[in-house]
Length: 167
Image 1 (cartoon, rainbow, N blue to C red):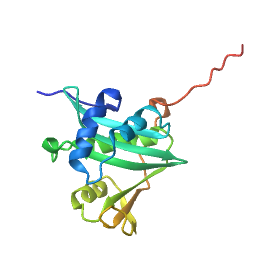
Image 2 (image 1 turned 135 degrees about the horizontal axis):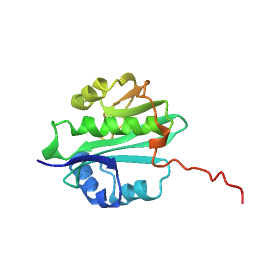
Image 3 (image 1 turned 90 degrees about the horizontal axis):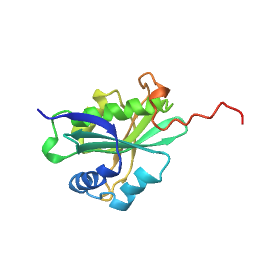
Image 4 (image 1 turned 60 degrees about the vertical axis):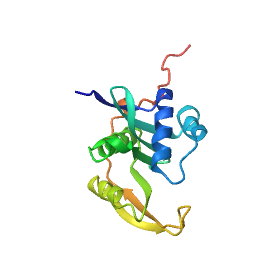
């Protein structure tokens, strides 16, 4: 039986995320962009699902004020339909709550009914459209999650504690 884990994306996941990105999206992010998300973008947070240590799904967001804006969610093609997309998205939602976010947003292709079904299942609601948002002029459906789970700031791996000791 395979070992399935969920955790923060790190450098060992970059090549697998790039491969999933390339196989999933018409206009995939470059390796350099993904690398910068993990190494230098202080507002980016990415979660991955690993099967026996190998990244098979990922989800990312940017934090802005009190909003977590989902950038990408994808699952390796041979692992789709098993629940890994939901697993990594739930982990990302919890990370947003733990990071102090109050709500989340995303854009999804109007033609991507499977993704919309997942987001609806997780509590996202339709809030509007972005006309001709994608490279092929397809509209994006804008969705929002207005109720996040209870946050546990002590679980935020990016939380910085100030030293209480005076020197």
